[in-house]
Length: 117
Image 1 (cartoon, rainbow, N blue to C red):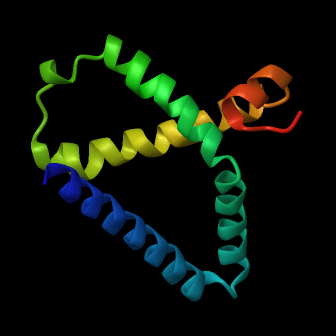
Image 2: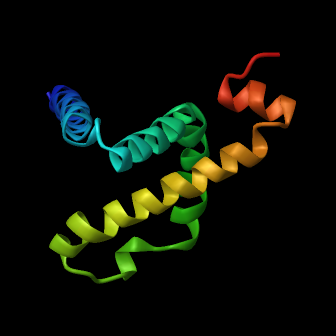
């Protein structure tokens, strides 16, 4: 039952993100600034597999080893709505640049990012 709830929450989150992207496109798609923002986001979107792999190493393996979240006392509302999205956004762009820097290395590109030989 717990798995089904997690699956439903994950699916709902994906649908919300897709809906927000569609809304942003409808609002800003025809404007010059909007096209620039959407172009930048689509560039980052091309590297999603690499970002996911690098985030797995950085957040789940390294960051949790050195930062003990249980020892940091912050209100749950601040943590849920400000702190965690901020960390996620920063880590996404850090991982994007790590992927861009390591992608030219042939073996890393093939093994971690699904690149062609």
